[in-house]
Length: 211
Image (spheres, rainbow, N blue to C red):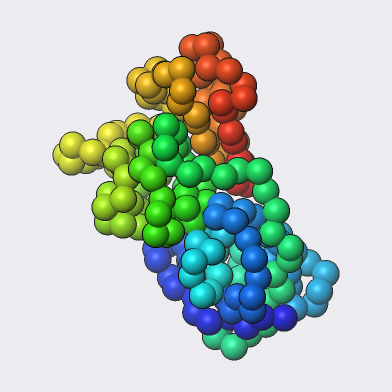
């Protein structure tokens, strides 16, 4: 089993875990199972690291009593199993609209941490409050970011007040645009419904729910 390299506390119950790579091959935005040292309990997480990096990273929120509660208690040197990578959610940037809520930002971080990522046309990020607003400087430096705060006011021009799904009618639609949605299942369902009504083909819609 690989060992934990670092556990970074990024906000209230928000963490990024760095783990030894041990030669593991994967694609940006892939998922894998993180496996308890007992070899039995496990849960799927998206990589937040890019394959160009020499370690693996996973961004998560601690849920009391859940598997993530155990992850949040790990320390450097602890053992953590990492399964075989998998997934069909692979944004690359060009001619794409990205939408994320909460820790659904993880696969997009994985893509953006590469050296040759192309910029999406739009990137919408929905979070509850500023305490959840991690990685913003990095995201603003790499993408045309719009942030949506559901529980907080803001005066910044790239920030909006309200839930991300309240603004879906403003989503651009184009014949060559693809849409990648990751995060809360309600956001993904509503996004698919609204975009389908606008005439976007199902083959141009890609969703990955984070529970």
